[in-house]
Amino acid sequence: MKLFTVLKNIWSIKELRDRIVFTLALLLVYRVGTFVVLPGVVPAALDKAAQNRGANDLLGLINVFTGGAFDNAAIFALGVMPYITASIIVQLLGFALPYFQRLQSKDGESGRKRLNQITRVLTVAITLVQGGGYLQLVRSIPGAVSLEVPEGLFWFSNIIILSAGTIFCMWLGERITDKGIGNGTSLIIQAGIIARLPQAFVFEFQKLFSDNKLLLFFLELALFFVVVMATILVIQGVRRIPIQFAKRMVGRTGGAMPAASARDYLPLKVNSAGVMPIIFAQALMFLPATAIQYMSGDSVNTGRINMLNDIYSLGYNLLFFTLIVVFTYVYTALMINPTSYADYLKRNNAFIPGVKPGEATSDYIDNIMTRITLPGAVFLGLIGILPSIAATFGINQQFALFFGGTTLLIMVGVALDTLQVIESYLLTQKYDGLIKSGRIQGRTSSGLQVGQPQ
Image (tube, rainbow, N blue to C red; front, side):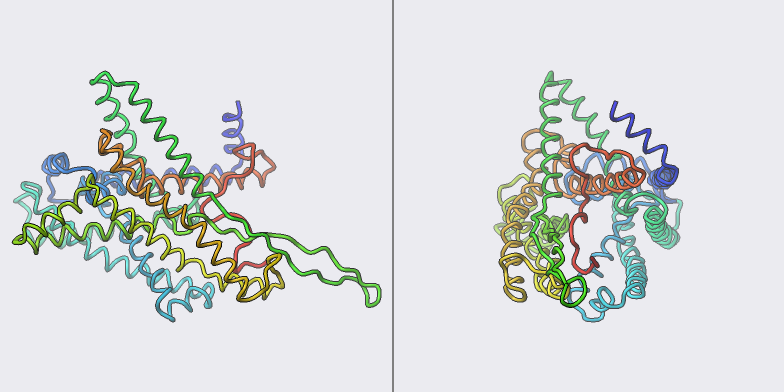
């Protein structure tokens, strides 16, 4: 069979085999760490508190990203999330501050190393803040902290352990990126998400089986498959703008002949913003919960804010959808600069057929980018509210989380990136690719990339 042939080819490439084994070994280390409980914490009290909390709230979502370590009060309770937060902050600073812009674009390898150092230091600072908040949350759970442990020792030791756990997770991700296969940080997050998926499947199966609705379970699986396929389609969707390099004369003077002009294309992705708009919108949607604490005396306003905290309400979903669409356009505008594309084509003596170089090219690319971003933004908005829609139709909250949002986008995107790396090894060794028609494309693949040489 084709599958066994592909697996045999993968295993026959020693470098690829070693990288896969190395990656799986480090991911196993990470999974073990998600079950090692912080000293002084009572696991039974945490389990009881987790059962009384909805899986669709902010804490439940964080628990999914950390593979259950958050609810376990494990040494990896914060996972790589502080590192992700620090990376996003540094990336946004690159759009606002000239110093970070210079490090990102002009200083080359030295600038990249400097940015990595800043990101790591910022990660430690964020971990200390989030670690304190997390320990406060644990202490607020009745019976979660052993009375035998002095309060000062509990805070001091566990903040150090949480910070060390996050730094260790970050180190694991970097080692996987260097010596493993794929992006290590993304794989760690995906490992945590996938670890919760079997439990969600089993819980949904047991619930529907006990209600004699087994056919409905298979219908849900078919719907989940359709959503995953649609997500893959949008992630890989690219609008190719054909470009042509100007002809050059070859041969001696007098007998020179025009050489055939080279053709390529500019790849403009339908979803250039990735998962970032959902993350930003989700962060804003949790602000009403904080506002309620200061508006308890105003019953009218409190009622409206409570409506925005109800993920099943129409107001919540409309606002969340709108924020995702708006942030998609904003983040795309920050990431994609049509003027940079136009300048790059002009420097390399290339042009878009039928479009004048310079400002006309920039306007042309900007118009196309605006058009193709609309379906990408609408789809991203639908993905963002799909877990709420699925839960409204009776799917349990744990399983509904996988129907959309950041969990689905991360799972699909990381899987495509990893499969693309494996396929490149196969093609290098003259083996067939993973699929017969075309090649697997990740989230950053295909075509002429601005700033890269021909």
